[in-house]
Image 1 (cartoon, protein in one colour):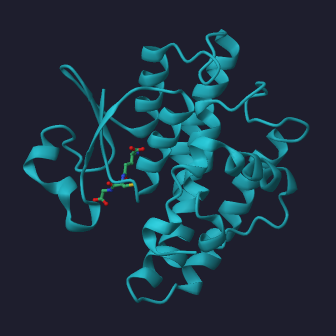
Image 2 (spheres, rainbow, N blue to C red):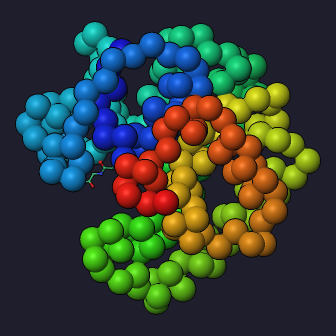
Length: 211
Ligand SMILES: N[C@@H](CCC(=O)N[C@@H](CS)C(=O)NCC(=O)O)C(=O)O
């Protein structure tokens, strides 16, 4: 398996941390996001969306970070990270879909306004952040309620790929200034994520010059 990625981007960090959690063996090819390497013909032949990351394995060209995590888990037999029990697996799959469709877009607004714009020398737009706040709070409340009384999202003894996927859009949450004050369970879970070796090894902050 080969991952084509830029370790500085959120969905690439997700896949890298997930592969490390599962102890997967893989090769890698760096594609420079900031010089538009993901728009070059060689990468577009792998992912016509021109978005990172992608994974190749023989003839397989796979994109969508959560699909990559599912494939790697199945290929490596990572049952703890992606349990075979049907009900637990359905739960993991549900959160992977929710992350991509709801949670990621909500967190991304804070990433763009409070991290990306300052890096590029622009000011965050307070009106954009204010408009996003109710959506973010409603989704965070759902996650916070789910995490009450359990360490991991799907009630498993250890983290699954759903935990890694869900943590990724909030991976720079201090710099993103995510409004987490009302969500103690979510904050405690994020502390557990941040203590994982796979998470610490893939920290993006130093790569972006953040402290
Ligand atoms: N839903 C996709 C999103 C992929 C995505 O948007 N990746 C970003 C980097 S984190 C990207 O390369 N965007 C392309 C662009 O900005 O043109 C996934 O989960 O893999």
